[in-house]
Image 1: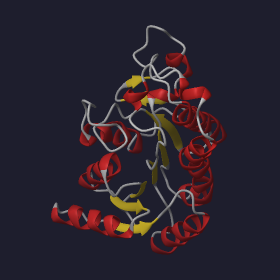
Image 2 (image 1 turned 90 degrees about the vertical axis):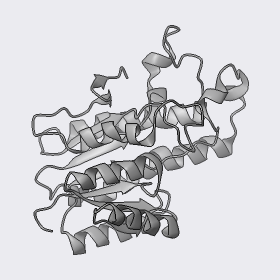
Image 3 (image 1 turned 45 degrees about the vertical axis):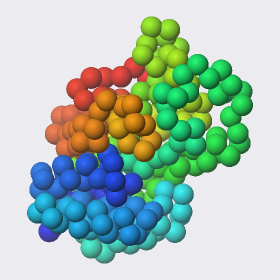
Length: 250
């Protein structure tokens, strides 16, 4: 196990996170499933086992600081390091992104619950849990931090009338992903002289509980960019914002 790379994927009990864990496992990386729900997390481990992939599960809620400490203790005692952190867990209080098209009240009418709750999960939780695990990532020979953002976090695209997301305005969710992108840029700059790479990504419009039923891409498709950034070579980019092989404007 000591030579095998270790990956922690939050929100990996289903959807993009699960497919990311599966694809990393097929590359010979040991995936650890982070999930708030113990039953579905353990079920994900069993699904991977049925496909010949060994993995593990730890209860992890990005809003629960006790889980940060428990995760640190788990990785420190079992592996002594963490090679890959995929910050995949996230939520939206505003529902299906495409349902917000043309809803002019979305920004002026956003509730405090939606704004604070979305930022807590998609931004603050990611920042503070990453900070908690960073000492273990620094022990890796090639640390990788992957922040699953969205093209809805791009201010450039939101302000461009010709962009495909111009009419899609979900203030709480969009703001949380813009803030997450800022975290990527700042942490990548702090770690620029280390072997750790930090990047944001847009997985695509994915047919999941969050993405909605009209989305054209599958969770398997959505995992591709996460896996690419999690396995970047030493000369790969850091501090970037990507979808597949394309760079997204901030």
